[in-house]
Structures are given as C-alpha cells and as structure tokens.
Image (cartoon, rainbow, N blue to C red; front, top):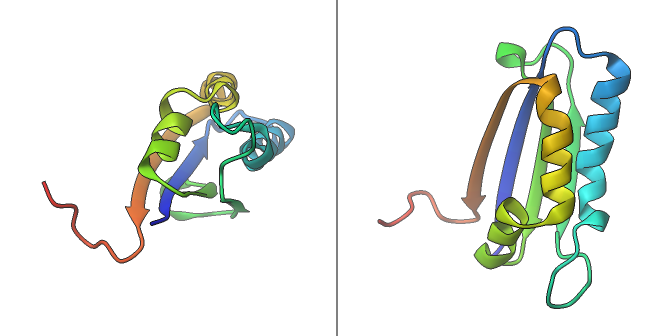
Length: 111
C-alpha cells in the first residue's frame, strides 16, 4: 500500500528566485539523498515537484513523495537526516508550509 505525502510551500516575498530554485531542487533530490537505515538504499518510491506561478493563496511549489509503507513515511518525516537538513535550511525562506498524507483508495482514516 503506497503512502503519498504532499508538501505545499509558500515562500516569503523577499526570497529570491535563485533560493526558491535551490530549495525546490533540494526537495526533488531527496529521492536519491534519503537512504533507508536498514537497506542503505534510497527508499522514496517517487518524488515529483511542480512549480506554479500565481497559485492559490500564495502557494507556489508542490511536491508529492510516495513511500512503500507507513514506516518508511514515518522515518522520512521524523528521522531521515537528508530530509531534516533540508527542512532546517529551507524554513527561514518560507511563510507557509502545508503537509497532507493520503493512501490510494482510503477516503476516511478509521480511528
């Protein structure tokens, strides 16, 4: 069951196009830079990035990551050094970050 994580970014108005490009490139590079602690191989199944000008409510960049399991997604979010480093480096340039996960075919998560 694939788990998908969507990240939407709104950059601060003063953030240069060069910095925006570098942050976006960093997100897309996570597919190769994030290494599973058990297999020592990349574990993100898919990392897609979209940069759109004039998007709704100031959101300009969207990234969709796909993982084979909740465990892989959780490791990425909570522990992966490459992901944590990118988040730390990028957060000073961002006004808003929205993150949502979904699983194919699951409309409502059972509590």
